[in-house]
Amino acid sequence: MKLYTGDLSPYSAKIRMQIYAMGIQDDVEFGLPVEFMMGKMYKVSPIGRIPVLETNEGLIPESEVIAEYLDDLYPDKSMVGTTPKNRADVRVLSRIGDIYLMNNIFMSLSQMNPETRSQAVIDLLMGQVARGIGALERHLGDGQFAVGDCLTRADCSLVPALWMCVGTVPRFGADNPIKADSRVAKYWDNIQQNEFAAKIIDEMNQGLKARMDGTEQKIREEAKVKEAKMVGVKMKAILISICLLLLSNCSMIPTAKTIEVSTIAEPVPMYHPPLPLEVGLVDVNWEILTPELMNDYLASYEDGSAPATAYYTLTSKEYENLSMNMAEIKRYLRDTLSVIKFYKEYDKKSNIEEKVSDTK
Image 1 (cartoon, rainbow, N blue to C red):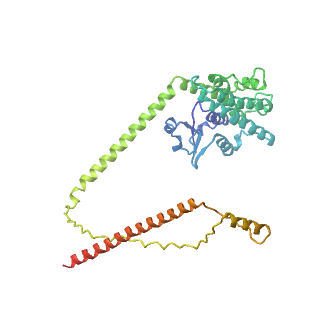
Image 2 (cartoon, rainbow, N blue to C red):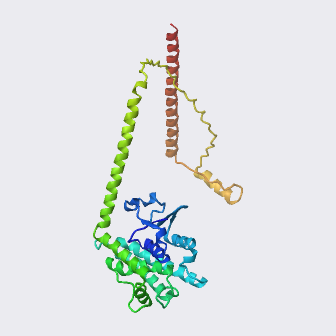
Image 3 (cartoon, rainbow, N blue to C red):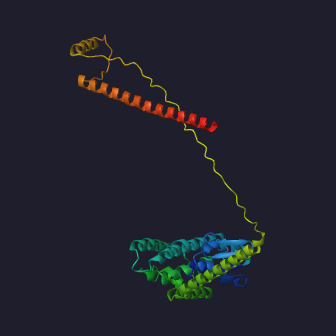
């Protein structure tokens, strides 16, 4: 098996600690793919993050899934607890370490630069970290280990998480969330005495040093240069292959023949859409209401002999304007129709002349 891991990755560190504690390091090779250094880890694993465990059966991403897999693969060395309650406690503490501590501190790393730091972001994330520390205070055991009297996966999660609380949080202007004389502080002091925890802490310190002194960035740049050279070599090989292929096939290329192409322009008759249907008008009965007629209507309406009717009225001047408008519309339509008929007759005449000319 091969574990894709990085010294400073807390999720990778928890798997390495589990491997050390289970004594299976001879079965697992550690490495960091070039793709991760170039920000292209998604080419190795769709999730694009480490750790990833490579097995004969395929890739396994996500630290908690890898931890479960190793427990299932080596049941006699399982680190998930011996009783149902132990196993529940181990999983609870592991989730606190992963979700409330590691995840929120990891997202806070973007706030290390004082010039671009957002205090609102820090306050939000550190509030979640403090919530996680409070949960630890309640769920931690009283001994050297997180659960029971032996090392479990809970310790493997909490060691890198608490290391980040102590070593990383103060770097972006926040206080160490572990309070002095608390149960969490006591646990942190005790667990550092464990050989596997001490090994992980040392590896993470080395990873932080490489990040701060530029060693990690130098490795990333070297990886990019190496990839660029590999791309150049591949492109050169492809171009050489294409050139050789073209040279070898030159004698097989037939002599080009000249083909005369003539274009015959055929007149395309103009399309004449059918004329629209004639306007369908309905009869309009005009009623001229004089004051006398209006008074007669109102009297009939009041005694119930005339129905209620709404009248739309025009003054004499407005009626005159309406008549002039209608006449103008009729004139425009008539003139437009004349123009359309002219072009239709003209096009028909042109087509006849062309046909006569073609027969001569």
